[in-house]
Amino acid sequence: MTDECIEFRRVMALPAADIFAVLCDPQGHVAIDGSGMLMGADGSPVQAAGDTFTVHMDREALGDIPMGTYDVEVTIASFEQDRDISWTIVGTMRPPIGHRYGYALAPHTFDDGTEGTTVTSYYDWSDIHPDWRQRDIFPVVSGSSLRATLGILERTVRRGYAGDGRVSPRV
Image 1 (tube, rainbow, N blue to C red):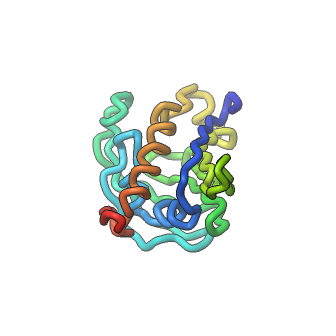
Image 2 (image 1 turned 60 degrees about the horizontal axis):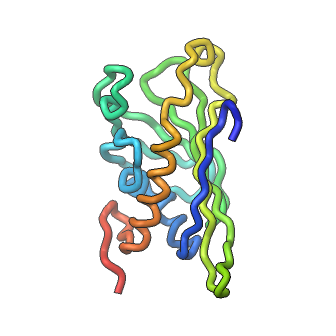
């Protein structure tokens, strides 16, 4: 972690491909949100940097700025299948803020030899627009929300994420 980036790691006894599938799906973002702001999403699962989708937000969950509901466009900034995904957000605020969220996935071998995945969730505001830097409001999303999202992600994948925002129990 730095003064302009927070990150948390969690080791999951799950395949990277199953985790990554949730992270690529707009509905997956809503399903695992630990901040309480993501209300819904429109768009197809992303497959490359530059892909976009829309997220319907409710800022009231943070209790900081009375913005109510609004939409943001998520643009995938980096994409490496089953390894890395990050995105920027353009919403109603102008100029665009310039912060980035993402996940890095790495193989993990447990002491008993079974395989899993180390998942790192991060929020980076080091490249925000100077107008936003002056306001000294970052981080907008707390570390506890990022940490919660990792737990929700693991639970969602364990329960059998169905790819449409729902889960279907694993057999």
